[in-house]
Image (cartoon, rainbow, N blue to C red; front, top):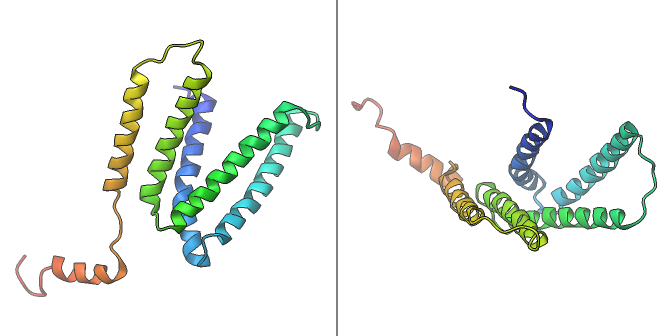
Length: 173
């Protein structure tokens, strides 16, 4: 069975973006600042975005002319991506945990993308009611994932929990 290339890239995107929140959380803990990681994210976007774009353009033998509406749409997309990274930083900064924030972000992103498509295609296509079933399903799934993701207890609670959950030394089990 051959997996189509777009599916491979979509799965890789899910892997990268799925690890983004937990890695951002770690960065924030080490740097003791919510905004230093955001600056590092910007640097990474510059390096990978510009470098990867140029390599891709050379591979496809594209010209290096950047004019017209396509450029404006590209800047709009980049702005939305940057704002998303900023608001994700703010979600984590304000006390959010990756296991709660990320299901909301990705479930919400899928839903917003579908709703934008509904709006754009409203004159050409009827909306299948199963779309709304899917939207409700995404909400339910995000809640289930956030609720049942294992988490470590706070530092003081870990030692207390270990004492009460293990039998006393020498006691029968």
